[in-house]
Image (cartoon, rainbow, N blue to C red; front, side, top):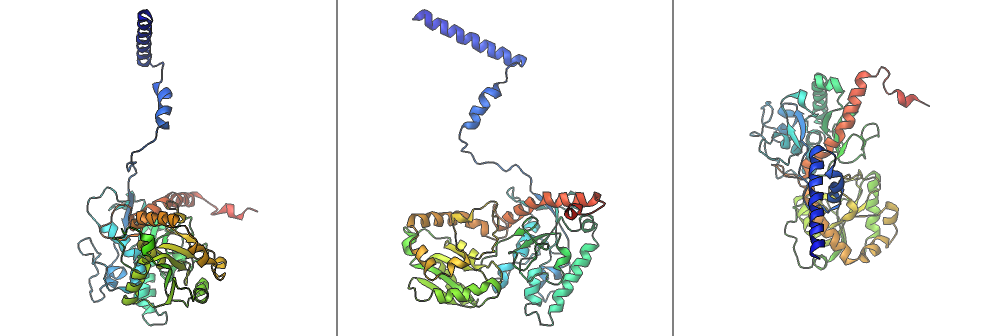
Length: 432
């Protein structure tokens, strides 16, 4: 036995010497033998951020195009800075839900250190990946043209004329025909007079309800979440959240809507008479928003039917209230859907299904408690992606939007490069 042991040790020693010598002279690639094994082991580490942030050049537009509309009495026309950026007004009402433009601008003005930022402002336009146009087109509509027949509508139109004139004088706009420019257009009526003249740009929209496919589409534009108007639920740690939410299905809002939104009036007739369903006609006031916040927190499911367009703020109010959304909107597009699977925390019914009397309520009543709890936990996990704040934080709404913009850059760059050398533009579309 001793002789066998000595023989084995001798063979191991010879093998070690051989491998060492082979590595030294380069005849054995150890990685080819051991790296596949290492790859097969589970990775429990959190991946580090290796990509550089999106480099954004923001035009210095006078304040009348952006924050000047928040404080209309001020005549200062100098571009806003991080020091002079006014806070978003607390009493802005429903104007807040389309304030994406403000938070995007604020994130670029922020000059604090934060390695998790998805976009940073650059002073040299030659080094920029994209160009941001800080025109608050949604706020302009809400401030000047909300009634559409009001004389102030001309102010909204003139701002669009002026900003387009400014852009056409920019060498960078001319170079790309606006393809690498980012323009917030979140309200469905934002930039409504001249939007066709900026349809090559990367638009930040709520949905595609008021746009043609040529004007706006998923291949080039970014769907951004509404800014929620209810207060986020941060103390949702009850022992049994399922039982504490005694309302099965909750809806509070306007029931008379246009286009696909006519489903709301039909649902009002179908959902009447259920003790565990709250379906209420309401207008947006401070008191009704407070009531909606309380109602969502006490409900298992929150109904999101289409409005005048496929989306509304109600979906995002439900998310931050940790109330499982029930979406009835056949043409809705959702934010960050290449990164987030909404089926993990939302239910979807077609309009046809939802209008079958009793069908939707029956499905919700039979919904397993454990599955609901799983969705509720997922809502708590992802709700920070729908928070707009200043200063911005890692993976919050504005950082998620900038990451989506970054995904659109390669296609925009391809279009710019091709346009610069093609003698016959879009020749492939003419093929039979």
